Image: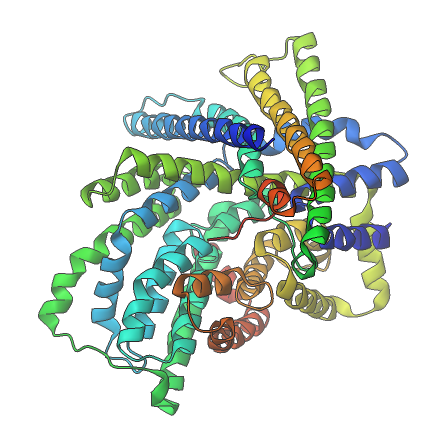
Length: 177
Length: 426
């Protein structure tokens, strides 16, 4: 189980790095556009494309933030509890997250499915086929649901084993520094 | 329905479920219990359109800029250079704490990273020169909050996005109050140190030659700040474009400092994705809740309820300010801001207040939340960097600055022009 969690964390780390590199590419594209505009030949379309980059980077990044335990939680009560109580709250919190992630993935599929059915294109000069960015976007949220379910399963195993520190490692709150 | 939403929000928050998830769960619950038609069928579309934004991509750019900047090693040089200019003031080194945190957090857009970086550079010197640890550390925590007000500010981008307000105008509105707050912070340090000199410590003496030689060290951060702000205000670039420019600028600074390595870039990029998606999950949640509340007409209900109380515009504003102060003790700042925008801003607008002005007022209140216990992120960060003494020291040291912020809230309400003059004049 620990191996599974570590592998997931490592994969999400590489995903984050790839998303970060995609951001750097967007930086270069945007600046090229600005430079070309100064010479009167704007490239155009970078705003649209950077929107897609943002949506895709977010969709994949939420899984990294999840395995890094970075999603914001209010710890007011949690901090006052004994380890078993904390583990219970972590489990509930992770279950709520996994459930919501599944709903987002399901509704996200609805968006992609209707794009595919209508062969929708963006209402812009580029007329991008929306299926391209939306497939990458949907895949990211799907991966979020998968990551959450894998973590939830490991968390459950640790709870049954009464291994509270392992629960904290998987689903707890990471100190800011 | 109003009771359901607010009580649901607080119960789930206390259950320590991630804030972004709570906002979506709440929307699903509102849909299930109150909506005559299935709202959540639109959930996917709302998630897509709230993150597919060429405006919001400015957020990861500013985060990345900050991640690179704090790893570039310019903090200590900036600190020493600022100190050479400010050390003659009563309170000596403390002014360098405030000025460095202000400048760094303004540019990097991150209060937490700034507080950590400046605390690392400053605390050894403060200890060596015999400063009172309370005021010394409190000043770092407080100075670090100013970055969310002084442009470029990630919080203002989020506010502008969620309330459909112009981000460049919000940036302009934050400039004067932000700088004023920094000056007032320094003023109260002077006052305190004149009244009780033991709060300060030794100030090394600098001559004009040393000050001038320090100027090049100020150039990187100052230059970065000025470039970003001027390109936005002059209308040369959108906030996104100037953020992209800032990233390249920060890379150059790190390169010149020989701090630009693959390892460093790897860490900075991962850190950027982590922070960005953490912010975005909350933003997406707020967008979903916004969608549900608007569809259900809850804002109108709330407004009628508040008007029924007969408090009037300013009475209602006072209640809202008080609620923020109280919530700010307990709730982390971005969540506090984002989770309440869908509910509070329509009310504020219906009473005839300006949305841009309220954005700035809200930022001061959020800044206060960063340095009020028990949940004050900057207090924890500074304490965890200095690794000794008690948390209570930092809390006590931040208190004078909390009072200044309260004063600022009053000032903004009495003189809205403080925020609105600059956007109107340009």
